[in-house]
Picture 1 (tube, rainbow, N blue to C red):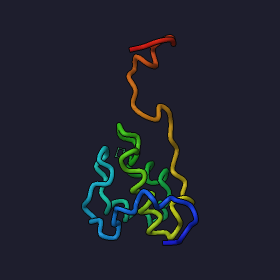
Picture 2: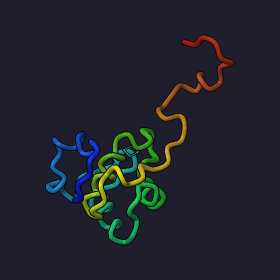
Picture 3: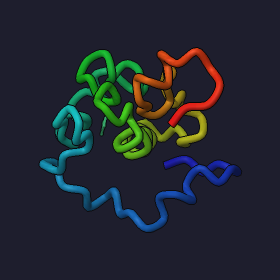
Length: 111
Ligand code: FES
């Protein structure tokens, strides 16, 4: 993997991606395994959005909060591009799940 000068690897110091088994489910929401991710990256699907369109990763209820960083790290490992140089993918609002009453309210206070 290439080195970079930012702190993009700080979040991954505890994880040993080299030992991550193929059958580990990376995207729990869409039940996508590491094997599936590893199969498609060498075929040119080397951005999060491309894998998202292909495998639906990041399209579950958590909107990629559970899988995005792991997938970006795997792309980095397999392509040699630093994580900070890989586009993190399109994130559409709401960024996190919210109650529908919030979007239906006319503003002001809500419970
Ligand atoms: S874990 Fe991938 S979308 Fe939730």
